[in-house]
Image (cartoon, rainbow, N blue to C red):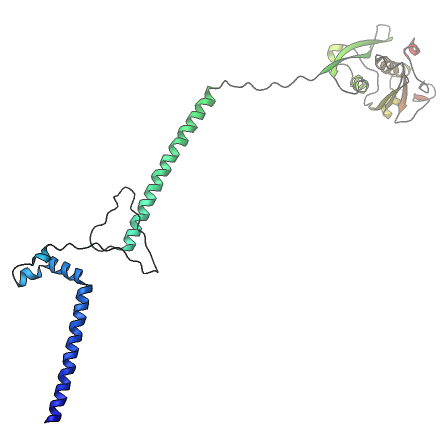
Length: 287
């Protein structure tokens, strides 16, 4: 009997220790969660339903606001939505839904700011257009006239007796650094209809070069200058035209004729039709 009593006493001691431990745990939990218990008792009206009256300390209990705690892994700062107050209704919320609302609000704010930013640009563009229209129209620049100089050219005329005479005309030609070359080229181009004269220089003749040294102008002509279809009068007239035109320049006293860069003694088509060009010609050569 004594053995059974000792076992029973031991078992009762273990149960008592377990109950004591449970009571201690409940006390600790109550101390830690007393605010939650009091809040739940007040919100559920526990004492009023069971006992009929609610203790005064439960009625006067004010729930403390809990400060947000961070677990050190993820901190979320919820920014207030533009245009709304920084408040939050009691209860739980869906984080994804809140993020979607914030994104929609930000897009709306961006659109409104973009519209506001575009309006001044439009106004500025309108103002610039008005200023441009108010400015007087700038007339197009006229091309600057080309500088010209007077050139005296000598052509030929045939009188009633068939005699070939020279005729001078004054023509405006472009001004350049090679006035002698330009003047001889204008002579080779022939007279205009208004000048009412003719040229006996063979058609197709080109000036290949011109130089002046010691008052002598060396004029180099193409091979066309060597043959004249009219004959002796034609050769004499073509040389006269060139000599009188070239000696209009103060630096030129005579002309030495060259054919394709070569100095020749004669030009002509045969023994009976030829003209000496082996030496320089002056104006007095045609008297």
